[in-house]
Length: 343
Image (tube, rainbow, N blue to C red):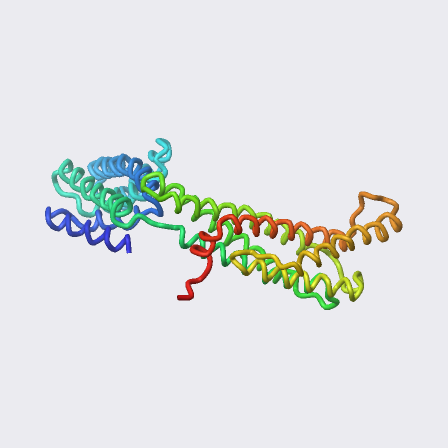
């Protein structure tokens, strides 16, 4: 949408002043950014970079004419000079401007130079204007939706991992690892959206409620980072069904089911049943450690896979408790931002 509006306005202005449209339109397309902050910062770099590209194109055209060598030299030298002057964000626009000038040079080099530089500047200014004034992005709804997706995916992955580590027939480990990588990639994208929103608010007003909601999202993301850490540890636990009694396996699967439900619930409400099962698992952890670690190995610092599995699940519960406390303090915002509208 932003790109289309930028191209339309750029073409309209260039057409009105009878200026070459193509250079300005190309510039408008490649200079649209995610945030107004990026548009302003990069516009300050792209303008001098474009001037350098146009000047180099004029110079090399005057020396070598309209040949293949001119195109090559203009592209290489423009990139080298912009990089040397730390104008890296303007390299693409400068190179396009420089090489696109060569076929349409007029006899008056100075006129061509200022014409091409002017049209490129129009493209840069219009794209910055659209980003800043007309369509300032709001990433908050995308962040909230992505956070819900993260917790739902984490619940499904946890269920797969526990089913795998307590079963005789193993699911392919690569499939779980691939799902985990997809989860962490989504987390990175969500963090990137959060960074975009921070940058955007430097130039646009926001309400106190929007700021509090954003801070809530950051606390939920911080908690999810811990969840991702525990999931990463759990996927590498090497256990089999015979390592646990039937009663222990029932407890693990029942508790996992509770965890999945809490993860999928945007309010992260924990049932009394889960607290009771966590207490049982905690007792089992110390009992299992005493019977199987100290007595069998004689080394208190050694933790077999079974103990690691139980420990990670107990830590997982601690994070869920933290999430429940966070949500209880901001019930109204949680309902507004994370619960689907059923009206």
